[in-house]
Length: 71
Image (tube, rainbow, N blue to C red; front, side):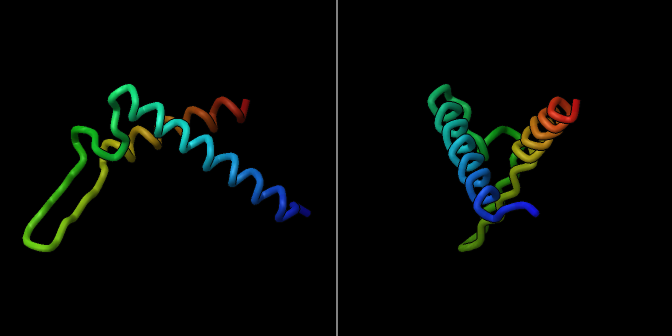
């Protein structure tokens, strides 16, 4: 049986790693979530934001990582 403590540790490590990646990307000038191709619609008090390109990039990166770790 998988221990809940291990799950929390792995989740925390994943969040820390993700935070470092976002900080590094911001410092080199790539702003995740605000890439060209992301849809932003503003009208009055309503803002609709859908990060199409960001989702595609994250999907490709995760697919490659899962493929690498599967082997």
